[in-house]
Image (tube, rainbow, N blue to C red; front, side):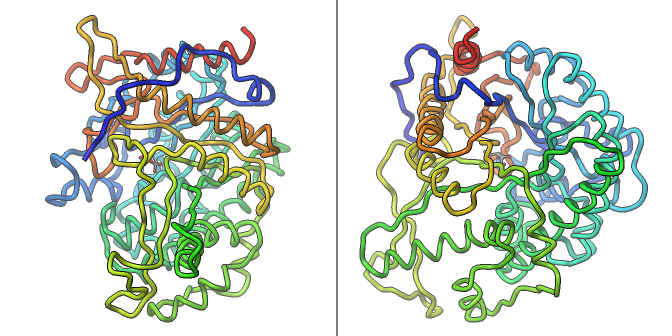
Length: 470
Ligand code: FCB
């Protein structure tokens, strides 16, 4: 399914003047994708440990047991990050390490790993950016109902506070959830991510409880920060794209609007404006769903945000008719069909649409007005290792260059974008795709655990340096 790009328009690294000031450059990872050591120091299984054991769930029956062995190799990995010359490192904290089983007191041995990570980063002048939840829900909480159950939101807030109290003296930049859309929709509706359930109603309940968990966590973290007069920058990370109608026909316009409701406004309208989108709410009963909203929930969800983390990979066009022109499906529901742009694709089969990032950032600025950071952007390609051991990944470099240019354009046009984190520092466990899809700007040889900075990594390092005027 992949159609690799064989040429690069990136050219040699050069300064990007629009990104020269007040801009944080970083690289990103997440716990389950790189750490390995899933049984070390009291960690208990997460939903991903369980899901990986389901036959057929993950490509090649792979799992995160070993991954990049980051848990063991952390000091040398931090050296590598330092070598890239970035300002910041975005990582996630594994809930089942810090609070095994998802409730009760902190596990000192699990926390100690993040303590060391944070101290090692700070000693090298790298600012830690911590994400509290990047999909590794403790299995016990899934057994008790998972995100469709309201109690999970309260459990998350408790974990967030406990973690923040332990690390918040040194970590100022926090985001609560990574991509709640993926947790809810891929995990509980499509069943392609852990925990692998397939129920639209469960997924919508999960959305509400994820957002509620975010809001409750924010409240408790702000309170803890105030007690100790700590500085705290608090945000949430969403996966977003720029959705457009395939044509000006009313059906296509309606389809794009519907897709936007479920993909973007469901989250941001609640987080920023304290309400769920009326058009979506009106449609949900037709799909047999009502959101389990209680009094006060939306005020909690709309807790002040310092920052919106934007993960951007691709954009989509939508048609409101199927291939035969029908506007409703077999259940009588309106058709929302993705229509390709016909652009080159990455190894994930995702179309490469940098202009969508510019349009997205300007739209977010207009409609939501929050300071933004690109918390993930990057691409998987089928890398080759050259005979001299280098990884000449011109396609990935072109992808990064194109998207950084898109950020620069958005910034020049008034979008308040304050940073960019390349996804990913390493090739790693790409969820249901296992280790097949390589997103790293650093290659990981899984037989030897050897790390090699790819050409794109060197290009990124040079771009950061030149943009800073060094
Ligand atoms: C995002 C995830 C990240 C990685 C990239 C490719 O949805 O946050 O962990 O899988 O996609």
